[in-house]
Image 1: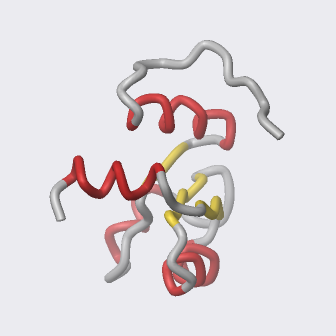
Image 2: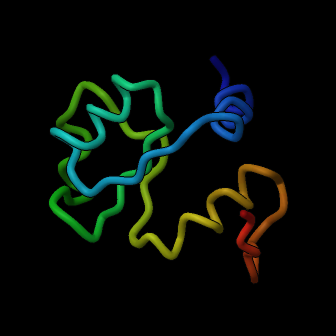
Length: 85
């Protein structure tokens, strides 16, 4: 699957954010979620390549997730995200 197709699929999927590759990311992948590894927890960036599986996205903080979504959607950097309910 090419990157554009994967990104489009990611926009229509449930997502799971997590800070541990060995349990959280693996579990999210097994459940069919788009996975977001947050580097503020257990797993460090230099450890990611050691795993046979990879998260869909890696961010340094939960605060960066909205901007990643905007980049995928082709909106550039979002300055404000509105809550929907």
